[in-house]
Length: 264
Length: 162
Image (cartoon, rainbow over all chains, first blue to last red; front, side):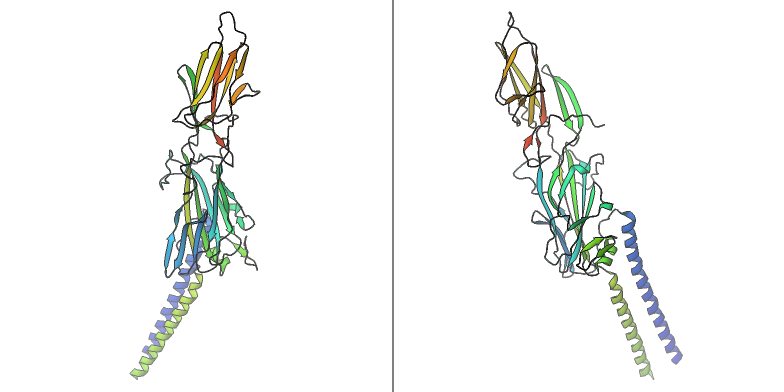
């Protein structure tokens, strides 16, 4: 009988040990996989939904208005993760003027219950859609158009560090140097938008005779095209930030004694 | 004997629960709190080329030149160049002559608006009072600087992007 009990105990202990190893191995595998994927692609995929249950939150603020947010509270996510920019760019039926600089103040709010580090990724590209203001997800980028004509005036580069290694004319990645405490906003990372219109070529030049006059008509190559701007803001917990940022964003950082984030 | 067995079994179960709990707490160290939000917006590059219409009239020894921008098109800046072998003088409000030989209308014309008259007056007519005056008129889009002030860029050279 004693032997039987011993056997049961040994079997149970073996089972517990196997389960333990299985759980640890799975966790490490997932963690490593995330790091690998983040490093491999350098495409900065949209962040995964990691619902671990922390009261973390982030809000993108455009000209004083909350345009997108995702906050964890009381076990649920309160979110508006696909906000719309430029809704109040033009006033009273005004038509957009290429060359003019429009106010576009962008900053990040810590709308959660814990301190965070943040980064911002800005994408700029063109879509041809013959003047339709709505953005259709099926529309594709017009890669023949120059994204650098879409100019966001980035400011406060003493606190917003640009990751130049992985930035390009279409994508800009900014890291906020300081941790953001609960309820605090970052300094603005942008204060204006301008569509540059120098060196724009013609799409079509038409020459005709009208009423005895020779008439030349020109259509500009960007006419009817849409300049699209996407802004993605991401937050990671302040606690154990170096590991958290590596795990979530695939980026090595160093947090100094003052809490400032430094890219490695 | 049976009671002792039950106690031992309970102990084993408790030990297992404790071990699993420790594992659960331990592995949670790997989870980090993250969140994100996104916003997107689009701005349409507008049609900017206004269609200008030249109207010419002759009265006595004067040629009257007026440029109008089509009301259904965009606004434009306009200019005109006069080719003639006659001895002529020019006049007209807001028309300014520049060294490149063009007369520039100083104000941008909004859709449907017309320029003031540019008068070309022949000073030394021939015996038949006949004269040849050829007008070339051009328009360029109204452009804007960073402050939103309109200006004309007559140096723009359009070539077709192929």
